Length: 78
Picture 1 (tube, rainbow, N blue to C red):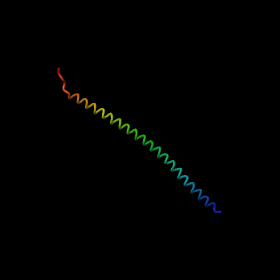
Picture 2 (cartoon, one colour):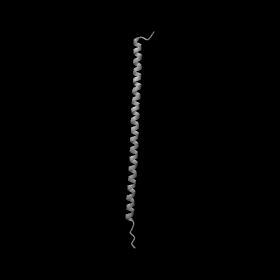
Picture 3 (cartoon, one colour):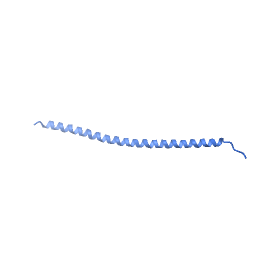
Picture 4 (cartoon, helix red, strand yellow):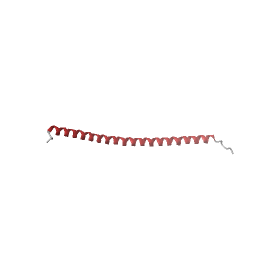
């Protein structure tokens, strides 16, 4: 009969430490996943904003070029 009080205590202690470590790892993993998903959403929003800004800048530059080309055309007199 090997199950003395010291062995039982040690086994329960080791089991508790391992269980606590696994639980803590699972909780940390969950929060890391939540932060990753928030980060990916923020990156996607930033990319959409950047794309929209670039598109607007291109439209503005196209309009400016169109205005310049209109100004350079000679006025035809009748």
